[in-house]
Image (cartoon, rainbow, N blue to C red; front, side):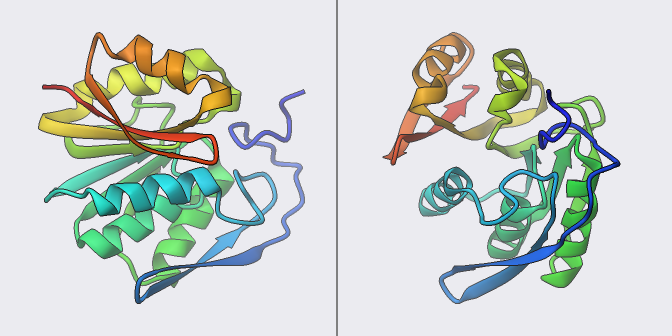
Length: 198
């Protein structure tokens, strides 16, 4: 049932790489994508909305963590534009291989590593950003959001995008007893919100 989902490693899936382009202002990027990764044919609208909403509201940060980084779209663009250290983590090994290639392709110094949520994550960050894997289930999504607090620096922020019809409102309500949550953007059913640990 889950064999071809982007959060499962399926070694039997044939490779069929393609290039996806994205520009933000004068910065243009190319990303290699492939079968078996999230949003393989085009950059996901939710990820673009999350990234661009954050960049409109950005603060000075020294480092950030992208949880569920896929082939590295958010990690690479943020690291380039903010000129800071970025780490992307994911469980999908094919996506991580692509992310590493994409870092080189775009001449951006970023790190990627395999991590089931925060299992292999060390240290703390000024920013945690995530387009969480909704299809992995609400339990996984809530673990990403709730445990982020342990990896945020003082005054750190977590930025998230979730679709309204995939439970954005109930998830925001559930994490509001841990964070101060503010909705920053609503676009085509996607909610972008920031959670501050106080």
